[in-house]
Image 1 (tube, rainbow, N blue to C red):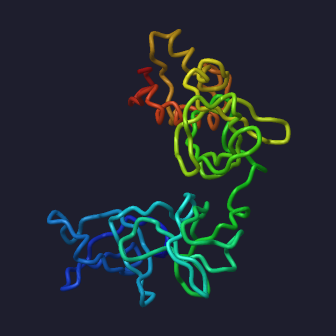
Image 2 (cartoon, one colour):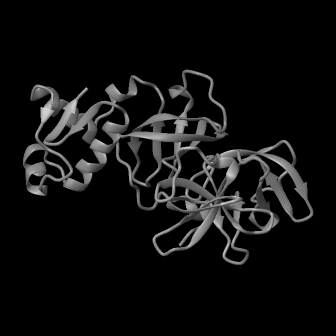
Image 3 (cartoon, rainbow, N blue to C red):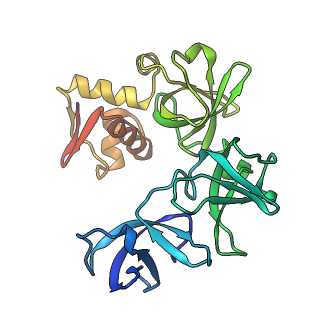
Length: 277
């Protein structure tokens, strides 16, 4: 099912005067307007596109990547306010993101920045924005661990630092003592999980030296790599017993850790194992 507000990899099915029609595995079609077409795209090719709705509520595809999509968050500027809600700039030409009043945590005013996400509205079949994001973020079940490299979004200043969003899933906190450069609401950057408290509150650092100060699975893997000439014959297809015998951790934890190390460009993944960079 083609869902507005999300990315889809679709197949070019037929060319028309208006652009290229794309289809999913079930044959549902959506138009990629001519202005987004490249000379290389041919019928039968696959292409990743973002789906939204036009002024007539028709599904439309674009190769432009907006600042926010379903499941992600961004600090967006309010462009206009109407009797029905606010329109925010999100990077799509000629199409602003609508945030109805019912979805506004605080009443939005022109020129302000608000933290929002998007979702497909079941009533209108449109992609809409919301700043009532509590239902989309939770620290109840964490998907990160101490020592992990993470992507963070700077959200709002607090008395002791900044509240941040971690991997678009969990709330965290950067304390003033960990801030060594100018940061602003809406900035995205790499961080490190310093500590997870018993109540699942998360302390984050953006200091590069923090990676040397924190311990965790990633550090254990890097140490094991250093102890074995930079290579370990372990990968995501290794058995749980092999991983536990070598590192003393579960396969699930191992896969998360090497994913973080790979994203941070600290290891390379080879056919028969992982190698330190």
